[in-house]
Length: 242
Image (cartoon, rainbow, N blue to C red):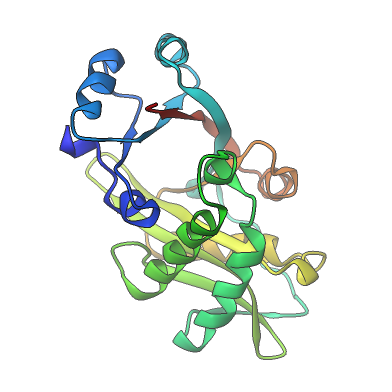
């Protein structure tokens, strides 16, 4: 059962947190066994097509926290042309770190399944995202590249991306990205993602994908505008032991 324990989540919240996904077959048994190792919270990320498993989790006591879709772009169909912007698109530099952290604090406050759960400390919830982007900036295991938008020598947006190359597929996935609120009318997120398409092509990937909460309409509009298509939808559910 220890393979289900999320080390990062457990360290952040100070108690054992487990994560389960779409490939489990006996959720009742897993829940019982995880209790034996003092697990307090289980986070489930399940494909919406797997109605049987979702219903099983509901009967056990799991509750909905958020839902997301995965947008995909096939790089073999050609790329949109880059535009002239009132800001620069540059590679990440360590001098951007504090500005990127501030963007993350603002953009991810009250965002996602952690914040949707009132049993979790809100301060620790935002620390999850801050730690996430810090790891992306400092460790290639988390992100291979970080695209930064810069205006007046200040970072105003970013997107971290990670390579996933196997014999069956070669794709780039967005890890985490955000734009400072005061610059969101300039097309920054569009430009960052457009840059990611060209960067992914130069890395010889076949496609690029990004996950988006279904309530994040501005980001969804960006991806539909760039002619991405949805390839997957998932629900996030939480279960607490009493």
